[in-house]
Amino acid sequence: MGTLTLRPGGTLAAAKLSAAARGLFRRLRYAGAPIGLLFALALAGCDEKAQSRAVGPPPPSVTVAQPVKRTVTDWDEFTGRFEAIEEVQVRARVGGFVNSVEFKDGAIVHAGDLLYIIDPRPFEAVKLQAEGQLADARAKEELAKRELDRGLTLVQTSAVSEQVVDQRRQALQAAHAAETQAEGTLKAAQLNVEFTNVLAPITGRVSRHLVTPGNLVQGSESGATLLTSIVSLDPIYIYFDVDEATYQRNSKLWFEGRRPSSRDTANPVRVALTGETRPSHEGKMDFVDNRLDVSTATLRSRAIIPNKDLSVLPGQFGRVRIIGSSPYEALLVPDTAIATDQSRKIVFVVKDDNTVEARAVVLGPLDDSLRVIREGLKAEDHVIVDGLQRARVGAKVTPKMAQAPAGGKAPAVPADKALAGDKPAAGAKP
Image 1 (cartoon, rainbow, N blue to C red):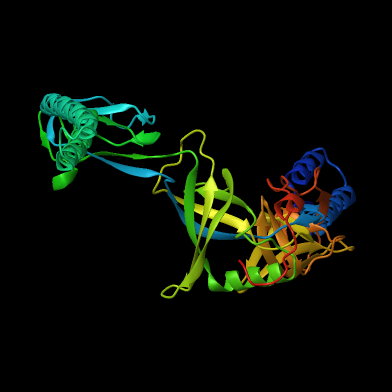
Image 2: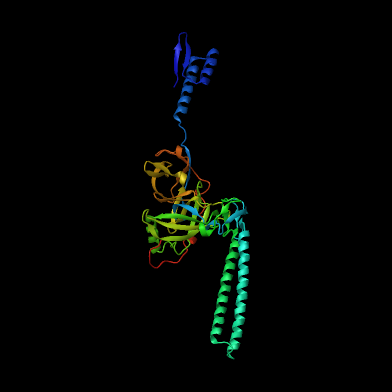
């Protein structure tokens, strides 16, 4: 409250008053107003200031929402590496000088496409020689056959002996063997001519050419020269290692009939690439190894992922998610509503009297943008989802319900479809 003093001469002085009160006080004093009126106005100004000081700020406003209740499925997450389903090192099958390279480095090639041309002239010459040898062998076989026929006719009249017939029969067999040998030589020569055209054995992306035209390459007989390599891209494998604890837990779920085995069921798989916060590729389980690695106590597993846009390359890393539980009802809240109190995870709940309470919770996995709450919350609780920095434990707040449910998208693979499969009979499988 302001203080009033009387100066000598009967004047009234005002101190610690508001600017408006002091201005009014001066105008009334210069106008010759009575001292009593001035005193009353001064007291009124002091009372107004005291009242405004006594009224505090309203409770802070926060946004609250009730936990989302829905059926979810836990997913285990592992680090994996992509590998090509098919990978071929293209090597020269015959030796010779390279005439030309018929592909563009890094391009997509199809099975049967021409990649290299090796000088075919030496092999064409060998082929012509083999063709001549085959013709000579066939002529000798034909002659031996005619002589044998004449011998068989003459032996009936004893014009020739049985020994001569046997000799001619043996000559025919030798001629037939020579013809077969000549045919084999010709086929080998024809293959060598074909091998001078190096073709792509599979469809995929080719690497760079390792040999330029004019260079001499070695064939398969003396260490074949590596020309390039090809990897298939669609679909593509991703390999990952499952730890022993997860393997045992999944085996237990399989025994109980709550999760199908990845050995005999193509369980769904989600993959997030490096730098991605959400899975961008979906696939299915394809292989589980028959033993754990003794050095790492992990089980090598493999999934097959469609790669229609050819964006994923062998050698890339990815975060693999596979089914880790049977479907169950759970409460979920936005992950941003969870705070950390030393070693505890807490959420702030607004009680019926609008006071804030810190509630310790047990977290589950992240489902899209929501976090599963295993313990610590009820479906009717009002959780602060916006304005955490303005909330204080035990203090009052002004709650405002969120416009939309605090939810995200449903899982990309429905839990009932993801876990479709026959109930196991016996034996442990991951």
